[in-house]
Image (cartoon, rainbow, N blue to C red; front, top):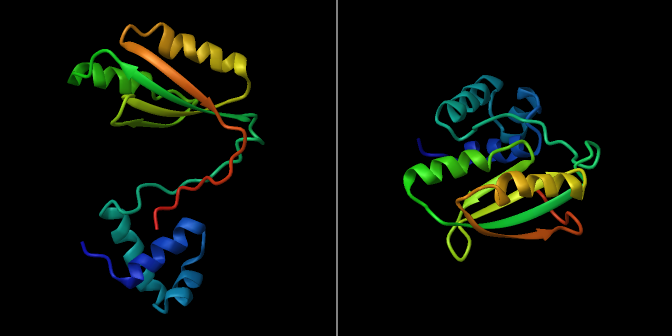
Length: 150
């Protein structure tokens, strides 16, 4: 599927507010509501729209500390990677990337307090025989966070 200017416009609008009505979307992109509905369904079917979610305020939910963790591992064979990806997918892990460079993984964690982070360190890193080393960076402020791609 090749995206045209209408598809790009719809995706940009939906990134800002996925609950925008079909009528409002149609008016914004100068198409009929039926056409917009068909396009959105096709974008979903083709995998351009993976999910429709609510973006929550971590502070309101007592997830006030953002921590970045670089992890270097001992083994990166297919079975070890599969297990590490599972180990690094808990509820406090907001994002996890398998990366190049000195580290093998980069994680973004949201925690309520440092005691919870200490418990996660023991669980995810200290007690994991495949973790060679890990390094943490604590965010002082969230300057910009977004899920926008366009």
